[in-house]
Image 1 (tube, rainbow, N blue to C red):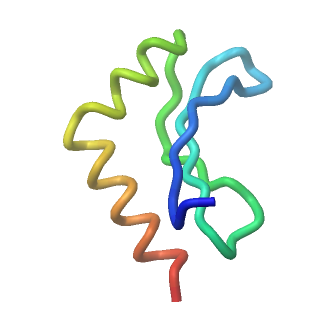
Image 2 (cartoon, one colour):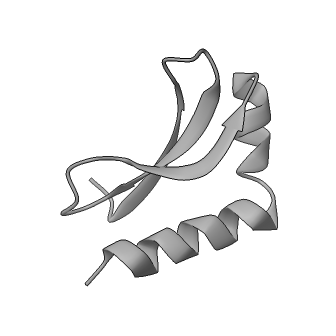
Image 3 (tube, rainbow, N blue to C red):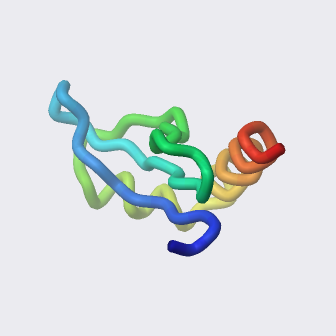
Length: 63
């Protein structure tokens, strides 16, 4: 597995969210945004806000 990977997954409440998967960290990390549609979550990954969120979580969880 690559060192980091982002997936879009459906939550129990029916909404969609982006999750960061880090090597050495068992549970996926929710990037903090929820969307009504899968396409909206995928599109969010193309904006700078998602890049910032990913970078913050990588720094937070990598030691």
